[in-house]
Image (cartoon, rainbow, N blue to C red; front, side):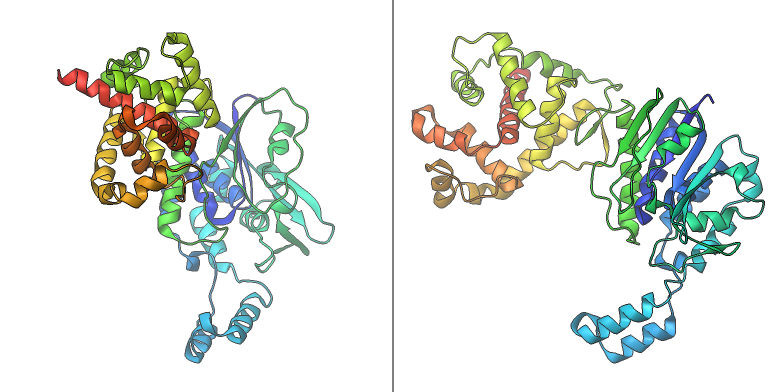
Length: 446
């Protein structure tokens, strides 16, 4: 079979991430010929096979718990009238027992699947659908492609694939089924059985099992979530919207349309400031004091070579666990953006990211200057031994940056060494990046 195959994982409301993946694949005209999934991944796979992105997106964006689970209003009022659940353990236990007695009623989910997914369209689609569920009695996996599913039973099998243990388990022809994640939450092997030679797999942490991938000669591209996606059943629209955005951006980055480890940078846009900065960091700083401080942070001798300086920069980025196959300055800016707390889930042009870093640093400095100039803060930073701050907060970074850059060389080697010993590799890279960037701006203004 030719063409790309797509594998979608199970994970409840985490499945919003997969809608973002779909958005990116559509935008970049990456064709999908077969799509398989487990649990919510099977439901999203059916939407992809139907090729109705806008309907699927609207469903996810408007999703509430009532679209999935039928809550018993009389039972809810029973507990509300008795008092708050948060302060009464007995009420909490009774509430949980009532909710899970016989399993949660997910008839609203089935009604929505029938309303949104047209079985005839899916059967006639050029995108072939597959799913995974598990027979509860035999506990054997049931892996089905669309042609294996009896006519008129697609919605039943989608519910079977997504049958979490806390749900009322569906029956099909006398057999009870449970979530396909109890066999394989990322059914790559199902695509391999279809002789798919180019596979895209969406994987995110979930409770499900994973089958060992069989030996193959197929191309496999894995898309992972870059941040925690929330809980399995978390019907929070802000989190769902964030996860859709994350799926979109992580997919574009996986396929190298965007670059960065924590951020998303588009190098296809003009970036004259970035190019000038990239040339600037290859040379030593003109200011003697600044140059000496760079050498201290990089542990270099005054007569070091350009190659030695680059190796020292790369070594620091490696300590920060940044990939060597990305441009050095791109890694340095990514680290610096994280240290100053730049918003993550957005696409940046290189020059815009540089300007956002400078703007954020300026705001942080103004906001925390009173703390930074405090005698106790200064004493803690320059004293021997570990600092009492957490080394990852924005105020910590701003403090170290301002005090290191502002420290006079006459302060003495011991005190500067005390400060440097407290820096994380990330803080060191960010301070160096900002020192070079500030020097570049001064040279531009001349």
